[in-house]
Image (cartoon, helix red, strand yellow):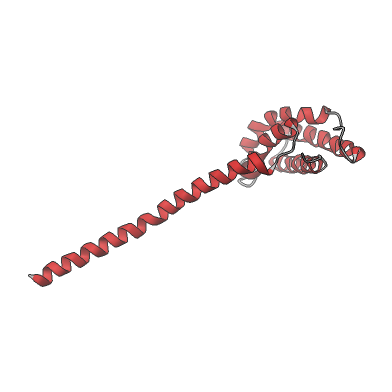
Length: 154
């Protein structure tokens, strides 16, 4: 009888231990998701402090396309959000060179490139192939980054 009792206690301990260890990765994964959400939130709030509202608004539209839709080849989403991205980019195409811009000529050059890239992206989103959409989006992203690099940091 004692052997049967000891055996049932051991089995109970083994089952309890295995159920606890199986549940742990789920908890860690949820914690990881919360950390990823927190990091994404920090990214938008602090990493790209352009000091210019038009740049911030455009980046808010650009970021999910660059980091979610493009890597997943989600061209349907890219096409659905293209008008919003182009609309957010319009103020950048028309803005004056900031007064405290150290290299005004470079800013104007990149602004012109960005404007052309945005036009090609709009066209590709409405009637281009997926490859044309991907290529034109990448040019928009890169020209935006180049223009943003020239902004004086505040």
